[in-house]
Image (cartoon, rainbow, N blue to C red; front, side, top):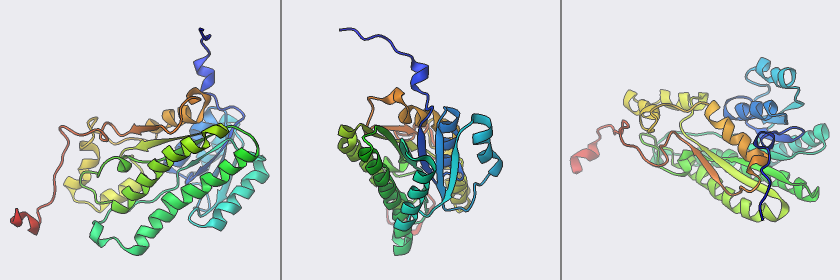
Amino acid sequence: MSYPITSVRSAFELTGKTFIVTGGAQGIGFAIAHAICEMGGNVAIWDIQPSPANPHAYAALSSQFGAKTVYIQSDVSKQAGIQDAFEKTMREFGTVDGVVPAAGIAIDKPFIEQTWDEYNRIQDINVRGTFFTVQLVAKHLIESKKKGSILLIASQSAHIALPGYRMAAYNASKGAVAMLNKVLGVELAPHGIRVNSISPGFVDSDMTRNVRETKSKREGEQMWMAPPNQRLSTQNDLTGAAVYLLSDASVHTTSADIAITGGLHAGTIDGLISYEASEADGLN
């Protein structure tokens, strides 16, 4: 039996669909929200910040693309914050078609120096916030007997120990997200809900700039020297994959991860890989 070839272009459209994007005030979250609106969708942006980082860019989501948008201040590390934001979203849109839990934080610090509170803060936002935000959306989709698409934000940190960086708590959190992607993709498939993830590499963002400022020059340069492509990623490197995984173009794709790292998740050949001299060197 042969199947007719269908339109590829229309499969990528998100017209009439509504997605929640957490951590959407700026950075990766806002870039994905922008892409959703460009492809015809609507967005509810949740963020701990009281307003978008760039109010003009946020306003353009409606004025340029005709999207319906709502901005909700929310702390996804708190159960009440997630529940309140979800209820506000439902009052505004009535329904949603999926979610992109992009809220996340990182810390670059040696493993033996990371504190209980630092660890908990990272897990509360990156893992717990993701878990329970997705849970609310999944419950709604199942109760509504509606298909949906969920896009998790994993990381190259779920695949490798980053050269020159000591981010054990962050790596652990993104490893959890990567496993959640596999498990939920399988568990929710019978309900017509697809779950996939992207694993960004070093993205030129406020978060990575802040981390880089704490490093030596040689360690800081590894962000763009270590990947085989030898450059930092930008938010624009991520949005095509995000649209693909949210749209019907990926209708038979679930539990998949797209690594967008410039090749670093697979290895490095000519990258600047070095470590500062330490007292331990004298023991070798």
